[in-house]
Amino acid sequence: MHCAYYVAGRCRSCTLIEQPYPGQLDDTQRRTAETLGARPGLRWEPPRASAEAGFRNKGKIVVGGTVQEPTLGILDADGHGVDLQDCALYVPAIHDALPVLAEFVTRARLDPYDVPARRGELKFVLVTASPDGQLMLRFVLRSQEPVARIRKHLPWLQAALPGLHVASVNLLPEHKAVTEGEREILLTEAETLRMRLDVDLHLRVRSFFQTNTDVAQALYRAAREWTDDVVPARVWDLYCGVGGFALHLAGAGREVTGVEISADAIESARRSAQDAALAGVDFEASDAGAWATTRLAAGEGGSTTRPDLVVVNPPRRGIGELAPALEHSDVPYVLYSSCNPTSLARDLDAMPSLRPVRAQVFDMFPHTAHAEVLTLLRRTEDADGPADTPAHGQWSGA
Image (spheres, rainbow, N blue to C red):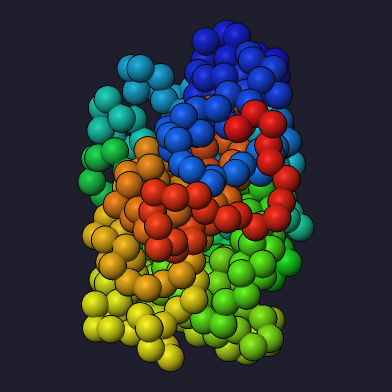
């Protein structure tokens, strides 16, 4: 895909953008399979492609330049703003909002933060778009000084961006390489952005959601299909976030428990379950790894409360000590969604009794080397022998 910013050397974030997309996808599949290594009985589904442009539902946008001429994009090597308002990766709602946000910076006299000089106020604009074009907007500031001006000009911004649904200020007084601080000031009556999928998900300002809505929906659908194939009566969804997997796997006669350390995320998940009138699903705010490890060690495996399927969707570091806890349990199935094939491979090695039997790459991040992979593991008594697999097609490049 042609990108003028890349050609001009202004942005090199999309390291593979000059490679034709089908080749990118094949390479991502190949690299992922090589990282996981030889796994007897593992069969690969065809990789799930993304749109090449207009797919990013969120932007972590650095604000630079001046009040009169702000830049919205990234920083260069010297810490100065590079304007990327015409980036083709954003969904239309975000792409169309960026010039309006630049004008708002000028109207509200929001002094962009100068990283080399360590002065100024507005550090980032964090924006998320729902599938129906509604926006959640966060202004990351060094101090509260500009908040009154933001409130004063907010009606103009809401008129200019009719899709603006949630707005807040985040305070990040420290000079460090993070995108948000601890304190949030809500500016709108609405607190959540509704992501309208097969099951609607409510996002709060600190909620995590996949960057690519279309591919995320495909991931949840695949998880539901694979789960239905093994017919579990009880499911644990660990590191559940706002409940994406748990809510999509809930169904008649199935008990689903989602566990996530963020109380805000759990509150959102509960609201989504209530809105969807889902029975048999509940959520708990707790450290997911410790929660599950304690219960597995206490002997819930094999009892009437043992899960038949454990879903894990951990951060990049993987599941750590939960892997040996699962290995020494008698949980029959694990569904592992990973954004880091390297840590996934390490966790698979720590669970030899849980053999991967089905896997699929979901391309959340076109034009980069990142990979999201869904893997179904099934317990087998003979870790060195062949494993049966569910009936499905095999990707020709595996």
